[in-house]
Image (cartoon, rainbow, N blue to C red; front, top):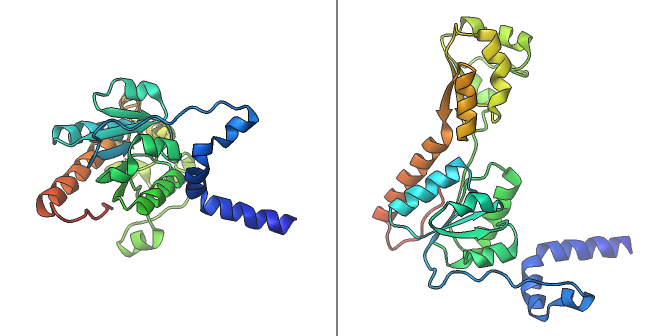
Length: 252
């Protein structure tokens, strides 16, 4: 029974979208007394649009820049408050779910962009985009390799940057400039306290409130979301201008 259950579960996970499409018209949950809400229909005439998933700072930058470039944009997010102030088509929901993708007319999009920093979700979005035959651009974070850095003459120190001994080993107080690529800017707090005003500290941030916090602590925020948005738009415009009749290759 256990082996049979394992095999059946694997089959259901592998073909869940097809099974959902097959049984959804029969409303199976209604037989159990559950209420089923009809999925949100896609906007009329929505074709060849760009879907942006995640309305963080980067996502909002991309929506504004794509709209200014004359593209039809659909914004997707799980937080309705982040969608309320947008002037484009919006879909409230998780893009991993089939109903949300249907509401965004996933299969007729020309490009799907994820600004999320959740690696597992991005992997699922890329999988569903590939199945739909739609190019997908994912916001990829830098994954530094110690061996590569050492080959380039960079000294690598292993440890937590919040540990004073690690900072001493790295020679933070004698550096000309310190650059932090940590995802959570607040992790740089001990570094700011230790180095003080003696060394400029550049801190990568993604949200406006993070930038305000870094500035209040005496650091210099580098708004990575804006830079990522500019890099995406450069790629997007070059692709559109050089390959109007060819499918777009996904951006790194």
